[in-house]
Image (cartoon, rainbow, N blue to C red; front, side, top):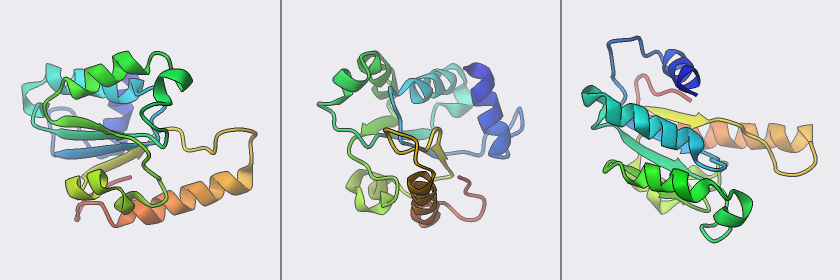
Amino acid sequence: RRATLRRTWRTCGVRSGTWPIGNILTVGEGDFSYSADLCDVLVADADRRKTRLLATTFDSEEDMPLLFPASRLHIARVVALPAAGVAYRVDATNLANSFTVAARAPFDVIRFNFPHVRGKSNTKHNRALLAGFLGSARGLLAWPGGRT
């Protein structure tokens, strides 16, 4: 998982020894394991502790333990970081419609790890999801240099 996080930083233009990212949004979390590991990285490095993170999911808070039993532990790790938070029922195709997301914008990085429509594979719906996400994320990125 740490190697995945390092790849994330590289794709965001972050080289080792530099940390320009101040505000991160993760979209479409499943069990919140990615954001929990990201929080561990942020806590471990003094330069990164001030980075803000908002982890979001389309699912409701009530449904999370049923869909992802391990999510309670991961969410607890996320909210343990003072500058991190979790938001539920966030539509990736209309991010600005979420008060929590809009209030924390603009973001330096918006990360959608596994964009897909739940259920049977449907390329048409997945393409629409990605197009909607990219259009929605564009208005919430910090400029210059914000990345999805």
